[in-house]
Structure formats: C-alpha cells, structure tokens
Image 1: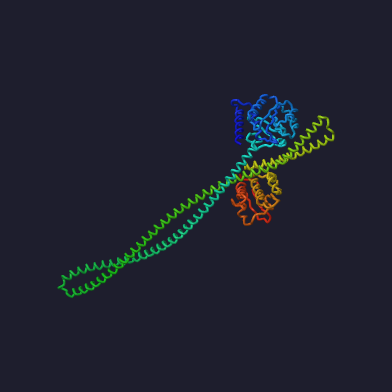
Image 2: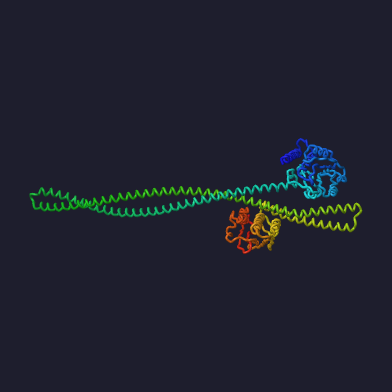
Amino acid sequence: MKYLFLSTLCIVVMLSSFNNNAEETLSEQTLKSAFIGQFSHFINWPNSPKQLNVAYMGNDDQYWQALQNMASSGASKYALTLSRISNAEHVLLTDAHILVIGQSHNRYISGINALLGDRATLLVSEYVTDNKLIGINFYKTNKQTLSFNLNRYNLLYQGLSISEDIVLLGGSEIDVAHMVKEMTSKLSDSAKQIDKLNSHIRTQEISITEKQKQIEKKQQSINLKNQELELLSEKIKQTQFDHEKQLDDLASQLAQKEHLLEDKQNKVSDTQNELDKMNEQSRKLTALIDKNQQHIEQQTQKLSRLSNGLKEKEQALQVKEKQVEQTTNVLFISLGALIAFAVLAANLWYLSKRKQALNKLLEAHNEELENINQQLITTQKQLVESEKMASLAGLVTGVAHEVNTPLGAAITAVTHLSAISTEIYSDFKDKKLSSQKFERILEEQLQATDIIFKNLCRSADLIKSFKQVSADQVSEAAREFEIGDYLHEIITSLKHELKRAQVHVSIRCDFQKRIYTYPGVFSQVLTNLVINSLIHGFKSQQAGHIQLEVKQENGHLFIHYQDNGCGIDKQNLDKIFDPFFTTNRNSGSTGLGLSICYNLITQKMQGNITCLESENGAHFELSFPFTIQT
C-alpha cells in the first residue's frame, strides 16, 4: 500500500507539472505511459499471469518510445513485453493483455471490440467520444489537464476485475466514487461524534439532575426561612402594636396627671398668695395686737386651719411624686421595649441581606442552567444535521442499488445487440445471410432495443426522483410543487428499502393544486416516518403496508400516515416526540427521529404533527398550510 501511494503521488506530481506548463521535462506521451504502467496495479487478469503482453497500434513514435521506457523502468508490478502492430487483423495474433490504440487508429475501435469479444484484454484508447466502445480512455479536461474515464461494464464483460483503489489515480467517474467514499467516511466520523455527544449529554443530564436536587433543597430551606421570617414579622408587628397601645395609654395617663398637677400647682400658688396676704395682715395685726386681742385669736385659729390645709397639700404632693416616679419607670420599660424592637429590626435587616445573597446564588444557578440548555440546543442542531446526512447517505445507497439493476439489464441487452450485429455483419460480408436469419436477428434487435429503452427510462425516472428529493433536502428552500407527484418521488427514492423489507406503499391524493412550502423538510419528515415503520413497526413481520391519504380543509393540508405494523403502546403516545425517547436503544436507536420531525413540522413548516390512537399499527396526522409565511 505504501508503494501504491508513492507511485500515485509521483504521477500526480508529474501530471501537475505537465498541466501547469512548468519546465516541460515530461511529454503527454510519457504521462500516458506512466498511467498505463500504474493501471496494472489496480486491474487483475484471469489466471494471474506473471508477465503482461502490451501491444501498441498507432503512428506516434514518441508514444511507442515512452511505452518502451516505461516497460524498462519497472513502473509496473508485472514484467512487460512490448509489440507494435499496424492493423486490426493482427490484434488476435498478439494475444495481448493490454492493447494501446493511438488516436490515429480510433476509427478501428468498433471493429477491434468485435474481434476481442469477451477476451481478457484491457483496451486503452485516447480521445474516443463513444463511451460504449472504450475500456479506459484518455482525454483532456476543460482546464487542459490529462484525465481518463473507464467503462466498468466492458471491463467486467471481458473478465477483468477492478480494485476500488483506482480512485487514487483520478478520473471523471472515479470522482463520484471518491465522493461517496468520502461521504461514508464523514458519516462514520459523524456517528462517532454522535456517540461522544450522547455520552456528554448523559453526563450533563446527571449533572443537571444533581443540581436541580440541590436547588430544590435550597429552595425548601429558603421557603422555611421565609416562613420563619413571616412568623417573626407577625410577632414583631403584634408586639409593636401592643407597645404602641401601652405607650398611648401611658401618654394619656401622663397628660391627665400633668393636668391635675398643674391644677394643684395653681392651687398652691393661690394658697401662697393667700399666705402672703395673711402674713401682711399678720404684720398689721401685730401692730394692732394690743388693740384687738380677740381679733388676733380669731386670726390665729384661721392660721391653724390654713396650716392643716397646707399639710394636707404636702401629703397630696408626695402622692403625686410617687405617681410621677411610677410613670418614669413605665417610660424606662417602654424604652427597653423600643431597644428590643430595634434589635428585632436589625435581625430582620440581616435576614433580608441573607435572602438577597441566596437570591443571587439562585440567579447564578439559573444562568448556569440556561447555558447548559443552550449547549443542549446546539447539540440537538448538530444531531439534526447528522441525522439529515445519514438519511441522505441512505437515499444515495438505495438509489444506486436500484439504478444498478436496470442499467445492468440495459448493458446486457447492448452487449447482445452488439454480438448479433457483428454476426449479421459477418454473414452479410461473407454473403451467408439468409432471409430467415435476417428476420430473426431483426426481431432480436427490436427486442434488445425495447429492453434498453425501457430500462434506461426506468433509470432516468429513478435518477430524476433522487435528484429532486436530494436537492430539496440539501437546499431546504421553499418552492412551489404538487404534493401528489412529490409523494410519488419520495416513495420512489425509498424503493430499495421498501423492496428489501417487502413493504407496499399506497397513496390516495385528490388534491390537485400546487402548494408553496419547504419540500426538503417535508421529504425528510416523510422519510423518517417510513424508516421508523421499517425499523420498529415491521421488525417482526415479513411484509407490510403503508397508506398515505391527503386531504385539505380551510387552507391546510392534512396527511394521514398509517402502517399495519406492531403499533405504539398507549402509555408511550405522550412521550413519542420527546428527544432521546426510544424503545429500541439496544439496537442503536438515538430517539431523535420523531423529535426532529416534530420540530421541523411545527417550526419550519408552521404546522403540526400528532400521533393518533390506532388498533392496527401506527397512525400519524400531519397538517400544514398551503402557503408558508416566510
């Protein structure tokens, strides 16, 4: 394999230097000879000869010299012997394994093919336009680069087997095979990436579940704290209300006491005034004591009574002082209650700050959950693209298998037609052609032509259906189309899978108007439903039936999809469109097929898809408007 890669690399370097008009050290004949030497590495002859006979028929001496140089350089894995012939009659005498035809002798290609028949001879030509006559043919591309194309069926007819590694040399038909091979590699890489993403998603789901449990515990703790805060707040409010009520009562009592005290003070002041007046009178009476002793005694009695009244007033003042002292004590108690209230308010402030911190922590967790959700959405988009590419790859494989059958029949008919044409030409040339034989051969030619025409038409229909469906799935552009014809094209593209599973599809569509929506999205949804039926619905059946019915109502299309498979359990109907839900995970199912269908129908086509209860198989209803709003 290492030698094969190095030799191919050398040819590519030589070819690029030739095509880029660098220093012209290699001629076109030298490059063709190098290609011919490399062909022996990828084509196997019957009986595995140790030596290959190479014959050249042409007028190009440089080409002949280049072939001799290639044979002597050991570029082929076989020992090569060269011979040069001048006309077609010498072809059968050379017993050549490789016959190289120069451009000057292209007019003999048809006769040489007839002479070779099914002999194991590799026919190498150049610039031949009729691909039915060639084995391997050199040509120049639009960029003036040297390339080649090959007719696999002629090579197989001649008993030559071809290695798939011939794609390393290039070629027009080979490019398609290389593209399919590269797509297969990418799909393999996508499958590995899907497995990694599934593992990552499961890890994220476990992490999310644990974080949700932690958040629930913290939420419960916060709820308990909130309840305690509410109870404490109610107690504080009740205590504050009681204290305010007591303060109001005390303030009212104090106001009354102050009013009484003020009255008493006014009375004391009046009494003092009276005492002052009495003292003045006493002084006057002292002066008149000698004159009116009786009057003094009377005044003395009055003074005694007034003194008793003063004592009573003093006792009353002492009682008032005790009451004021009690009021002061009550005020101190109220002040202590206010201090306790302030402490409670500080606790409430602390709890409020704690609650704010917990809220910030909760917001951080919510933001983290949102980021994880965004990652899940991105992962889902990648899985959708991988699912789309897998669906397209399956479509390519199925159509290639279906196209191979009619093309093989057409090639067989062409080969038979060529053989009987050669036979009739030989008999005509030898003047041995009878009318009966001529009539028989004409009938066989008509039959072969009819077979070729029917099989080529069948191949064209398959390729047309595949081309339209695959182009729609790749572009995802909205366009106008007829739903009935498009349903038939989708089913035709899935014909290989349906035939292998022995499943028949019937379509009932009376709707003749054209609709404007996304045909690629619709084909992907319908393809997923059919593949689901083949994998899940008919896994234990030898044959099945799928029915599609199209109806219209109030500007919407309703498509009923129903199969007669094993059906869906009723307890799974509500979860059938959930991401990653599957009942067949052990067989490699990811559970994304119906979830992707639901998202495409609801978001892209502005419609809806529902799974209906059915006693026989699975029943889906798809609805979407005639005209999409883009």
